[in-house]
Amino acid sequence: MRIRVVNPNTTRAMTDTIEQCAGAVVGPGTLLDAVTSAMGPASIESHYDEALSVPGILDAIARGERDGVDGYVIACFGDPGLDAARELAAGPVIGIAEAAMRAASHLGRGFSIVTTLDRTIGRAEDLAEHYGMRRFCRGIHACEIPVLALDTDPNARKIVTEACREAVEADGSDAIVLGCAGMADLCAHIRAEIGVPVVDGVAAATLTVQSLVTLGLRKSGRGEFAAPPSKTYRGVLRPFGRP
Image (cartoon, rainbow, N blue to C red; front, side, top):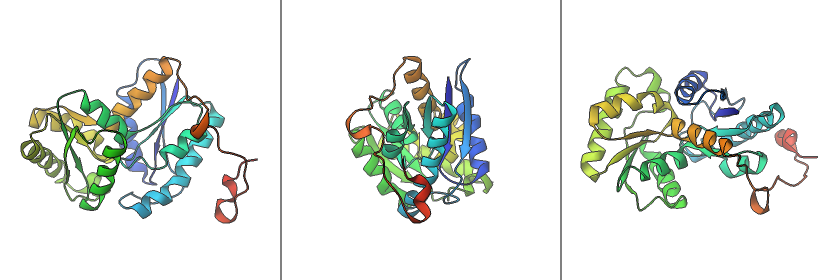
């Protein structure tokens, strides 16, 4: 089995963190590779960033299909380009926000999400609603650390941990969902510090893909998620046209 984890931003250091966390949970016989988007923003912290990250994601999926990849993880909490990626891939494609929320819903009556910047809260709210997780999601909180600062700010671990602790107390939640792929390596530390389950979407999505492939399940290929129709694209998007 081969799983590809796609980092939708162009920062290789974050890909390394993502790959380490995903690789720690895969089973024997699973080959995992994490790829950095070949085009797009250095980090994803706005609707603009998210929209412009999608071509890079689709490029990584298309290359994976040529390379025989069995399933994919989109490692950004906004789950950018998820529906388009599912059209393009034959195997399962899982976004880390959906995987994390679904995993957390099994662990108690409700969870809180701790994300990076306040401006990303609305997107997380939209996704919780879209995935049918709104009744489990008791609150969404920002720690106000930019995505790239998670790797460079020496106080980042402490700030995120305290934000998680405060979220549990404020919301009466039974679990925490980490709202950024760049937080993946903080999961075990925060869990030990605050005493409730802490879900990292990178690990949750990777194991979801592995489980679906193990069960022999692929997308149906009918209707909305059938392969995109043949079409010519122009300008900078010309390479994305389909014969």
